[in-house]
Length: 153
Image (cartoon, rainbow, N blue to C red):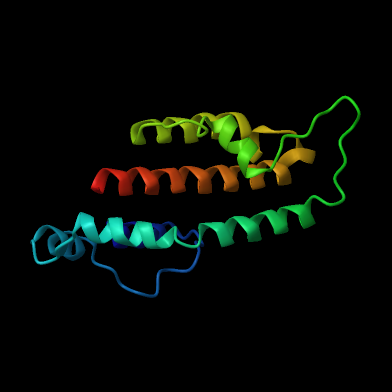
C-alpha cells in the first residue's frame, strides 16, 4: 500500500520527502505474530514492570533536583499561588493518600493530566506543569506496581 502511494506521488510530479530506506513487509510481521510461534507471557511483562520501578526513589530524587534547578529563577506574582512540585502534595492531589483500586489509577492519571498538562496551562507555568506531570506519572506507576505486587501475593 505504501509502495502504491510512493508510485502515485512520483507520477504526480510532486517532490516529497525521502523514501524509507529499509523495506518493511507489514503482512509478514502480522503473520508471524498470529502464527503462535511468538509466545508472550504476562508474568514476564509484570516482572519487567516491577524491575523498572525498583529505582523509583533515586528517580524521584533526581527529578526533584532537576526541577529545583529549572525553577530556581521562577517567582510567583503576589496574587498567584504556584502549584507544588512536592511528591507528597501531588500524591494528595491525585488521591493516592488513601488506598485506591488499580482500575481507578487510569482515571486519576487522565483527570490530573486534564487539569495540569503543560499544553493547558499559562506559558510561564509550562515548565512547572511538565515536572508535575512527570512526578504524577511516576507516582501512579508506582501505585500500579504496588497494586500488582499486592494482587500476586
